[in-house]
Amino acid sequence: MSSTATTPAGLPVVVIGAGPVGLAAAAHLAERGIDFQVLESGPTAGAAILEWGHVKLFSPWRFDIDPAARRLLEADGWTAPDLAALPTGGELVADYLEPLAKLPALAANIRYGARVTGISRVGIDRVRSRGRDKAPFLIRLASGDEITASAIIDASGTWRTPNVLGATGLPAHGEHQVAHLIDHALPDIAGADRETFAGRHTLVVGAGHSAANTLLALGQLATEEPGTTITWAIRARSATRSYGGGDADALPARGALGTRLRDLVKDGQVRLLTGFSTHTVRAARDGVEVTGADGRAVTVDRIVSATGFRPDHSIASELRLDLDPILGSTRDLAPLIDPNEHSCGTVPPHGVDELSHPEPGYYAIGVKSYGRAPTFLMATGYEQARSVVAALAGDWDAARDVQLELPETGVCSSNLVDETAPATEGESCGTGGGCGTPASADVKRGLATGVSGGLLSVELPLVEASANVGGGCCGS
Image (tube, rainbow, N blue to C red; front, side, top):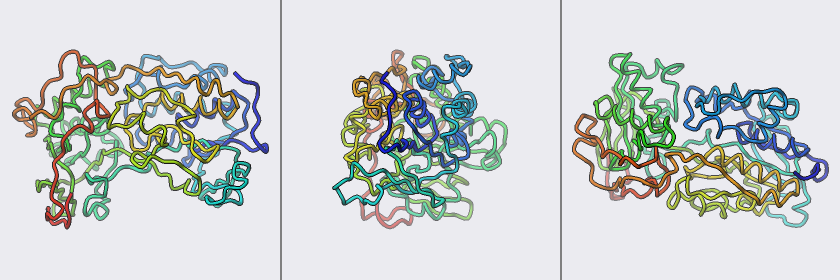
């Protein structure tokens, strides 16, 4: 560890976001004696996580705790949970993030209810070059307050900017008009949102972890509340990737998720629509009608859009960012995380060099750093935080000694069944009769990401741009 570092002009490093990665950055800054301030828009640490606090993580505690944070906590008498246990989001906050945020080394430096609306340089806009690297950062809050900083670590995440329903990346026709009937990822179906879904027909759109968890919660609700009906729509021609490797999965919880999901479809509790690309949504007399690019339509009471998230870089629009035009990550990081080429298990360790922009001193870390790539793991964010803080301390040897131990998770394996093969009989019907080719016994995966996971290697149904589908105007 390097000697105690000081920041230019005596200004603090500002960390945006008090989630796991933001607080990990704060812990590393505290260990190195660097003055810092954490700005959290919510009322507590891990505020965004609490919105899906009912959901259990797939990775056990040993991969969920940052090393610097653990050192600070244990020095204060904290005892780690069972490292082999799987926490819920709520437990991650209550048993780890809240105690971490209350440590004397961190607590006085965290400001809650502080939403950042813009970042620039004091007296300098994006155009001016002379003196740029000497000017402090200027951070404007929704309250109107302005804060100056020597450097910025943006760990604000992507939870507030979900992807749209439309399969093209644009909103589906009519999506904004029926927004009140669309829930985004991970509603609390068994708890606070139960009445919203009980006895109603819900369409879940998406093929990832959020969709699977939502479908299982709805399946349980259907056994308790008569009239609860479930339809699941995915763009792929097969749900094989979503079912995962079952008992062969390296993370048992992830494997069990896929197995239970397959059973729901096989038993007819979930009607599966494969090859379905959402094109149009419109209010109907008996709910909301959702039409695919191929003209198929389903009318439901409510939609859960589990289509992932994307970053919002608008707060940094006056900074000089070098963003990859495809993913929205840094240009140097993009080829390492590109889901057209990688799953998260093939993402190499990376740190400050890959996270740097032309704007010196500004770093986006955590899930925001990955842009629209779905290959992020929490442990990756912790190593990003360590590397960036080491660089801010001037300890470049440590900053560039990037090492990463990742769980051999199902989501990271590239040993996958070919999902582009024709579906087996009954696979898209939502009834018994197969509903997908069983994964081979040696497949160690769950819900895969990246091209090696089949995510972006699937031929999707297309529609001519001149087609008039379901009352929409212009193509898919």
